[in-house]
Image 1: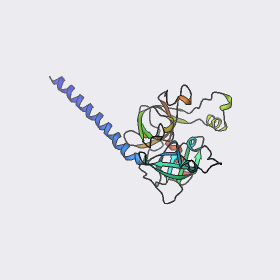
Image 2: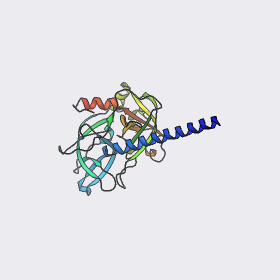
Image 3: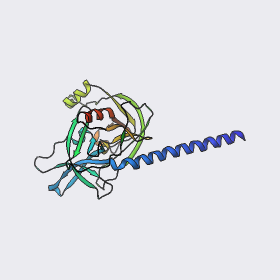
Image 4: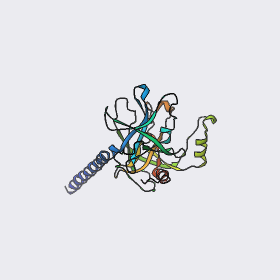
Length: 259
């Protein structure tokens, strides 16, 4: 009888602990979502067509946005008027704000944007972890726009684990893919997070944060696509990667921006 009571108490305790952890994530997502934005382009001549390229997040004093360099690396059209923009809000009636590039680092695949309108700002609800790398097994989450914004702006949250802290490597399929940026990365190998979590192309630039505290520990920047990038949506591997937050801190610091 005593053993049964102890077992019942343990089961109740574990159930309450799991519920508390789940509620922590709910609270974190509710807090940080207003600071998650879509990043893309606006083409006025095409009926103000907005194309989402990836995800970003607001930081600093609410006037700066962090994302991946590859999300904003494509040159704006010289034949038509185009703007880099961020999209904020939820649903079909989201707001579009013109931004400009502050700085970028192709080696670490990071870029910082700022609102073109100096009076514009958005909630800056993220907090940031220090430069210490999370150990394997740590629970993480990220919020972004995995499949774009065709039906509207609906941020989605995915969770998982830090599977490993491993040297960065971008395998090339042929010598023709060994461009200067890739060669520079291979020469300056650095540690990144390998995640047991499914990210999609639209998640590029999403803040990777601690499931418990919501502190940003990295930036999602790529997924392992076993059959090639065209299968990243239809056949995800569940293996994703993120750049540690210290590299964003360094990029921000050289522009006198505090995290």
